[in-house]
Length: 133
Image (cartoon, rainbow, N blue to C red; front, top):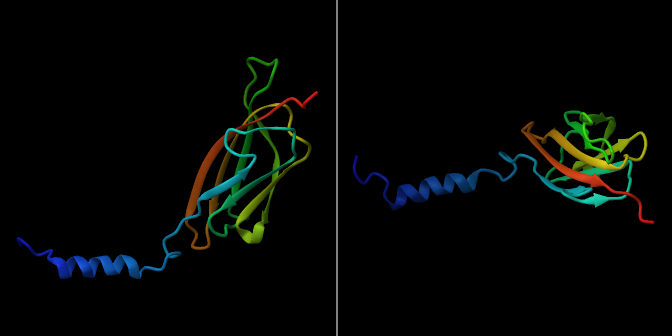
């Protein structure tokens, strides 16, 4: 079997990789978010997740958890309700809270699916700061 992978065989296998359509095996990835990872923002009731390809809002799940609040050292994590809707031609998820988020630290965890039903998950943290005086 020695030497069976000669240059013509290598070229053949490489051509198979190139022949696969780009979107056939793609999975959505987060390409932007508002607020961004690690950002410190003014109170807001709207967040947005932007993906590399269209995603299904109905197949998406988002958990927004307040992990810390000033003046409450032993506060347990508090889940914040958000409504999820498609935006940006299907490449974004618009998250709307009932009211502006209180001052504190947050973790946003998301799961979504692309057109080919491939799942993607992720999370990031951000902070809502005191308004400027």
